[in-house]
Length: 339
Length: 278
Image (cartoon, rainbow over all chains, first blue to last red; front, side, top):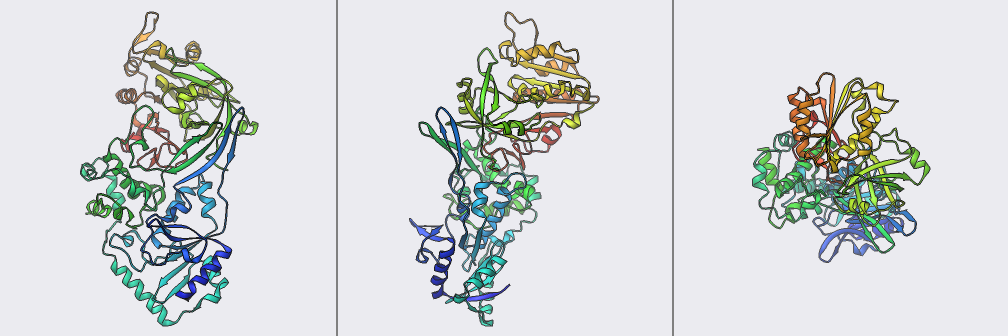
């Protein structure tokens, strides 16, 4: 696939062209928090960011979304509310987050039941990745088969080489974009490609956390009853920020909100870290304490998900480590488990 | 097809089951004829029942697929949805989607002696299979059928109107028991697991299917094993808090198994290798 170069001062032109044809989601800073949102002009996009605080999963799986409305008067009438299918570009997603979307696809697009709310937003989306040239101290994507410049799940990949980006077309959709907007791109010189390799190499070297996770699933098979969990859950407050900000966590609640004669059913992010998550109407709760709930989070990602979908449900983005109020570090848990 | 959209259905009939009035059976008919014909389920499956303005709850289908044109749900008043249903009157419109989950392994049960062991409202999912097997189209496919059913008191027995029919049948070995009798009760008194030992069904060419309170299930399984039943010959059905019903929302799992999708019916052999988290 082809590689081109774009001067940084041409980025505005490129984005403006994209905005004419697509709905563009890009990293933006709002209320001091970096997240992905639809932009109206190229100026809104943030180019200088490490990663978004809130993962881009919310574009396809929002924090809260309406599923249907109903009228409950003399007659009951249900009106399906589906998101519109529109051509979208997700600009600036990091490779770890792109991989996470592929994991969410496994859940929401499983052979038995397809989730229309997720899929209608997910389809027709072009993923323009921004290679991760400055991995943070909490990053460990390379332990999970990822890399700062991994192409998995992307259509185009941008690599920052100073005053310009090297742009690589990865899929046919990506190549089409390069051709369609060829006026903003230049031919990549050998020196550009060398620069790109150097940036990639340097980024990989910045990732100091390395955990050999090949055997983690098998290891956890024998760990359910282990006293390990009694120890590690102690400092967890159960605030659930780790799951809310996790790009692969996908648990949700479904609930109704009603007015007098009308109502709506919506779903919202939920978390296995909350006691109410599994509390039954009888009062029985299979995951009574923090111990069971912390165990569930680790087991789901590194054992159950692997059994169901063949892959670990973690991409090593480090958000759960960076945002935890009590420094619960999943890497330490994993290191202990595999050692 | 949007799997989250409920189909509208009318509560056609409400039957009060227990003296305490904490269990009612709802006869429900889909408003749309195509849905009525297309809703094909097997004994052991469940549906998500919506009360508009309240929420949704997973409820096992207690009618048998041999009862055409309507569904029955027997519901104990427990949480918000079940309380709303208990407050409902005949004619109310609710939402139903499904059917969900696996089902009782009917094909594996053909040609075998069947032992049903139920406690309290736990009879509801078993009843679907009992009536399926007792139906004239299916009865020949199964050998001896035994039903052991118990409740805390005579007033807590559910489906009393139907228990009599089972009792009268020549081709059913029927035992009913209560933990504690009242002045009028002339039947058996004793816990279900104890009655199971008294009756002592043979494990030879047999399958036992049990559902009831967790403590009952625990002792029933112990006693069945004492009688010589292997873990493969013991079948039960579980409940968990659920929302989506289709293996996505992430709360009903026991290990890697989703009760909504891989269950709710499991053999004891399957349960043995699953984490004890239910």
